[in-house]
Image (cartoon, rainbow, N blue to C red; front, side, top):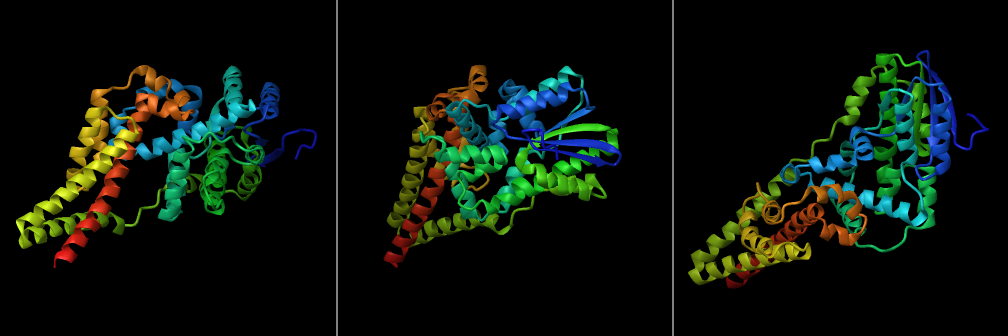
Length: 400
């Protein structure tokens, strides 16, 4: 380790190639200065950065967000992922504004200088979507829910980030620290966010060395990854490509939760049949309860997201029907209605990341507002399904 440097540095020799690991603080100007000093020394043939393709694009080409097909994102079930990513970015931006620092400045500087010197840029981190999915797969449903709701609550929080969190950012990993802000147990996050990514980045570096033959590589990574990355590089992998494929695999979710919505639908329809069998009056009363409760709660969710009045009405009409068809959700219908009534402009997409740093911006920007309408109307319909289901069961039991 180089002791004269304020930032930790490890120099390794891997397969006859020299690899310099620079441990940076993602919120430190000193780290950005050290990156500049090392790259300007012209001692390297390639620069590796702790970024995946998605994060790289977000950093160098934020306007790419304007090309997002919002309805396709919702149909593919990626809306929650986009909301979580925007919430994390908003939290990090809040840190930047509060303390006058720029998260990820050293990565951006490394990219700019690598391009200036004509050096290849190696994106060695795992795709953030895969990391989030593997993180969620390792948590119980309750911990996933508390983590996601914590991220959502951060949207309306005006609470300042504590100095303690800033120090953790300086010492560790920005993804882990951001998630841990809303998690009760950091240990659940360590493996997918740190240990697995150490392995992944080591495998990517080995793959680049063996495939491209780079003789001198500067790898700019968070200080929290330095020790693990060094160990994994020295340990090596017989087949880096196979290791990468293993770490990119998303665990298959359990099959049994898929049947729960269909079971609920079967029980509700059975309840209607029993009600009409006993008396038409009771049957229509149960149907009325189902429509009113499910529709009202979904409409309230849409209204809380500042949906267009016709979208709120759509939520009321669609929710009781979509709740009886698990292949389509109320949120999908309300989002489609909102997009038809108030289509996002190019400016909305362009301003999305900036607007979502303030909770009011989530409701003002048409893109983020549509995502909230999808989420809130879906939650309202889901709550309505259980409330109405229990009410129907109670009335059938009481009338037996």
